[in-house]
Amino acid sequence: MNAGQCVIACDGESPLWRLAFSGSMALKGNAMSDSNYEPPAAAISAIGDAGETAVHPEVIELFARTQRWVRIFSVVGLVATGVVFAMMIVSLSSSDSIFRQPDASAMQRFFFGALYALAIANVFPLVRLNRYAAAIRRLKTRGTVSELVTVVDRQRGFWTYVGIEVAAVSALYVIGGAVAVLQG
Image (spheres, helix red, strand yellow):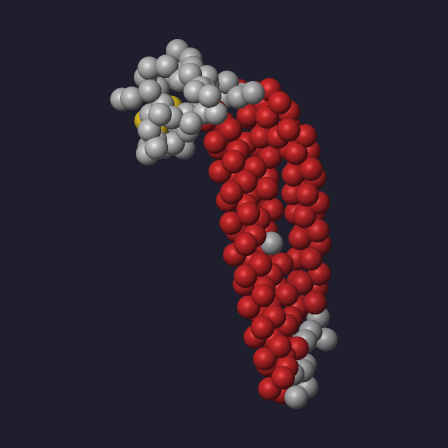
C-alpha cells in the first residue's frame, strides 16, 4: 500500500471503521500529491494499540451540547403524542365522532384519518431521537471513533425517516387538494 492510501474495514456488526496507513503521511506544500491522479493527502493521527482512535474533545462537547436538546424534543414529543393518542381514543369512542356522522363528507373523513395516521407515524422519529441521544451519551463516556460513527448513523437514520415522512405528508396535501378541487 502506498503512502496516503487507506483500507476501510468493518467488523460486520456495527459500522466500525478503522483506517490503516502505511508509510509517512506528510503534507506536501498545498496538500497536493506529485501525481495528478491521486487525491490530496492529509496528515491523519495514528491508530492506537486497540485499533481505536480517540475522538477530539471539542467534537464530543458539541454533541454533548446537542444531546440536551435532542432529549428534550424526544421527551416533549412523546408526551404530546401520548396526549394526542388519548384525544384520539376519546374522539373515536364519542358518539359525535366524524366517522359515525352520516353527513360527514369523504374529505372530512380522509383528513381526520390522515391526522390519526400522522400521529401514529410521529412516534417513530421520536424513538429515533431518543436512540440518537443515547448514542451521544455513550460517545461522551467512551469517546471512540466507533461511537462517533454510531452517533452520526443515528442522526442519519432520524433525518432519513423525517424526510420520508415529509414526502408522505406532502403527497397527502396534494391528494387532499385534488379531492377538494374535484368535489368543488
